[in-house]
Length: 288
Image (tube, rainbow, N blue to C red; front, side, top):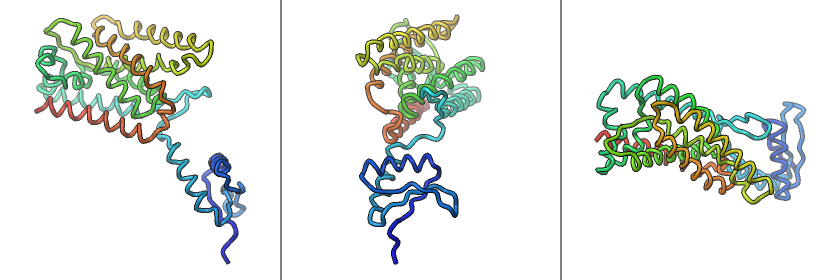
């Protein structure tokens, strides 16, 4: 005879309780139990409700899918995304290629005169080039930290793309303001863009409570202090740094008004595709 109840196995007690809440929200009667044979947790539902229960759990998992490299840093919900290390490794690959092929750097560096003649792709390609090992190491170290926190806050794809666009906008700002001829390269504008995104993350609290403006102002002031400490060193590209930081503030002010970006898999995947496109396409144009 067909059993009157069906078992839905769970990996842990926490997962079983999470799924229990999902089934409760759908009005599906069930029992959370622990198997005596395997000591594993499971949910028991009526046989006629089994398919509805499985569909509800599947939709819940799709909507709440998290990247495996996102880790919680504190009880206050601060997340760090270790995918930022992949970005630093990509910087190293570009540095190795530019050292092996001298023409690679000249094709991708930010040449203000070339940009003025239509070579827009240099605004992006210059981010991946560095003058020497110390320049690379500085951007890679601070970039891993700031990008990891940014990607943890806004989502892996969204945070990475937002910081990248902020870095390109920083190069655009520097190109527009500084006189020609001008040559520059480096990911510091992108790193400062990530810092701007972090500084403005409390903007979502605007008008929600009497103390919201204090938190927003504190975040911005803290970001500015870090910018002055890290982005105004002698010999640095101050215009690109400032442009990247301000661009990060502006982009972050928009993103904070969009709820739960970090948990939206489709948007983060689409942003990841956009980031990849804005790496490959400009370099394809540059190397032609």
